[in-house]
Length: 101
Image (cartoon, rainbow, N blue to C red):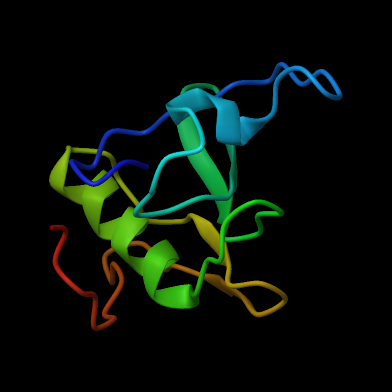
């Protein structure tokens, strides 16, 4: 996710040619990680990334950005680098998240 809250994703990977960090030219990000979409619904998201330092606050920021853009986050399993939580329907997420710059 870039600083404006835009999400970039690709299933393509080619060693020494294209990595997920290639999507925005290796520039700064507000969130980097992985996610699963099933039937058009985000079901799982993680802050695991090999190219970017990615604290849990970045994953929380991404969840808030998804919600602001109209994506339901109820039922998403959020994997905070080996600390998975499930967001219960109707409860959303209550985390302190730094504002996007």
